[in-house]
Structure formats: C-alpha cells, structure tokens
Image (cartoon, rainbow, N blue to C red):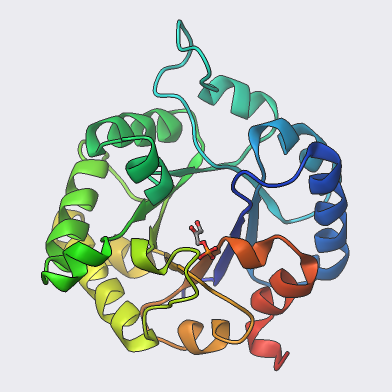
Amino acid sequence: MRTPYIAGNWKMHKTASEAEALARDLVRSLDREAKKVMIAPAFTALGAVKRCLEGSHILLGAQNMGPEEQGAHTGEVSVLMLKDLGVEVVILGHSERRHKYGEGDELINQKVKLAVSHGLDVVLCVGETLEQRDSGTTTGIVEEQLRRGLNGLGALAQVTIAYEPVWAIGTGKTATAKDADDTHRFIRELLARLYNQKEAEEMIIQYGGSVKPNNAAELMAMENIDGLLVGGASLTADSFVPIVRYDAGS
Ligand code: 13P
C-alpha cells in the first residue's frame, strides 16, 4: 500500500514572513490528514518555516542543493546546511534547474547520491519537453533521466520520483490522467528492471504540472499515480488544502 504523498514546491515565491504565514495556515488545516505532505519554500524561508512545523507531520523540503558537502561554490547551499536547518527532503533535477540553469543528469546524480548518503529523502524530477513528446521520445527521455539520475544508487528507499512533463508546468495544460498513468507505469516497470519488483511496487511516483483542486482527484485515482508535486496551486492554503484533501469531495 503506497501512502499518498502531496508536495508543494513554492519555487522563487514568498519572503520568510510570507512563507511562515502560509506554513501556519497549512499546519492548522492539514495536521490531521493521514497523507504524507511536504512543503518546499525558498532557502531563505527554511528556518522560519521549520519553526512553524515543529510538532507537525508536514515535512520540510528544499528545492535544490549543491553537489558537494562544502567548498568554493559561490551561491550554493550544501547538504550540511540543509540538515542543520531541519530539512528532511530535497527536490532534485527539477525541469527549471535542467532547462533554465543547464543542470545535466551527471550533476543531478551527484546531488542525489550526496543527499541520500546524508540521510535526506529525495524527490527526483523527470519529464520530457513538448518537442520530445511530439517526436514520440517521452519514454526514452524519461528512461535516460532515471538511469543516469539514479546511477550508482543501491536502493530506492529514500527516493520519490516526480514525473513532470515540462510542457505542463505552469501552463495550465495537464497531461490527461491516462497519459500520465501510462508514463508512471513505464517508470515503475523500469525501476523493477533496474532494482527489483518489491522496490518498484513500493515506489511513490508523483505527477506534477498544472495540478489544481479540480484535477487532483482524477489524477490520484489512477493506479500508478501515488502523489502530486504542486507548483502554483501550492502558494495559497485555499488551493493547496483542497488538493491535499482531494478525496474529501472538496
Ligand atoms: P505548476 O503546478 O505551477 O504547473 O508547477 C509544477 C511544478 O513544477 C512543481 O514542481
């Protein structure tokens, strides 16, 4: 049985005080939910949000991480710094990191292994561009991102996969639930080949890309969609809370 896992990626939004206010609202509304919930504010708000989450079961995530423990990496934030702030999960390989900042699979893989070795959970994002989808290479792209991103990682216990088709992010276009489920099934089958059947069956595979309160239930009803990685609609309690409660008829 896979526990539904709903995550909010706040991207480059919210000052520390704004983030704190939203985190307080979410704790009030969501603390009795049986699902796994994670929020990922900007680095500058992690400390303030962590204080709001004390005693709550909502997990604290970061949106990225540097590839080394420490050193001359101007502008980067290390795994040790994240751990020190109480971060439990890190999102890696997000398409905005890949496409706007040129992060490749090798760098992402280095970060994945570093995070896992320090006991952080990882949400590894994969997904194809519109061009790749139109040329029929979706599964090939996703397979390559997963093979390379997970290269050398012995076990999947600390990993969640997020399938985020690039063309669906922030555009209002969602993959149909059926299309998303097909890709999720492909990912699960690939993980069974790369690891084993048991780990693949236990793997949480989130969908991300224009998730809203009105499509969360349909997506989550699919056999291979186990969670959601939400961008824009995670920025207010009014839209994020009903997404987390997608099965409550709200
Ligand atoms: P939107 O929900 O705004 O499309 O963003 C999705 C995303 O990139 C989450 O990581």
